[in-house]
Amino acid sequence: MSVFDDKKNASEKRFALEAEEEFKAEARRNKKLALWAAELMNKDEEAAKKYVSEVIVADMEEAGDDDVFRKLKADFSTSGVEISDVALRDKMKAMHEEARQEIHDGK
Image (cartoon, rainbow, N blue to C red; front, top):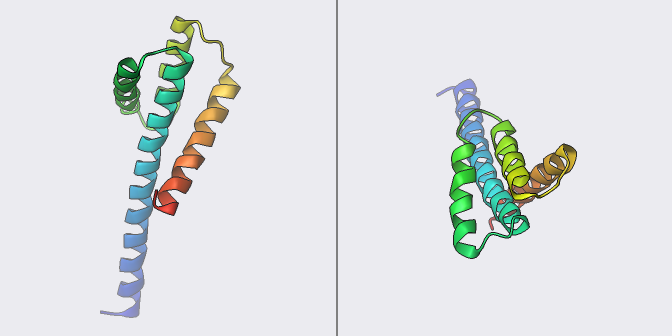
């Protein structure tokens, strides 16, 4: 195997690892968001667990975060929770960064 092939294989492995870590971080972020949102909407523990699943399913509708944002925004509206779009997006971003750091730290 040539040096070029070694570098190519290492690059592909690194890309796959980064993609896997990002997937895990998004899933963890969604769980954190769902639990946070459930608390704001005064859901009990059982309803909060169910809500985690609902948010995870919502994230599979399309690429990106807009599907999760729309789900949370609609559910907040229905529940009477007032939050600005900017505040919600900031919370999503903060929780994503927190989840990434936890994955990186092996938590």
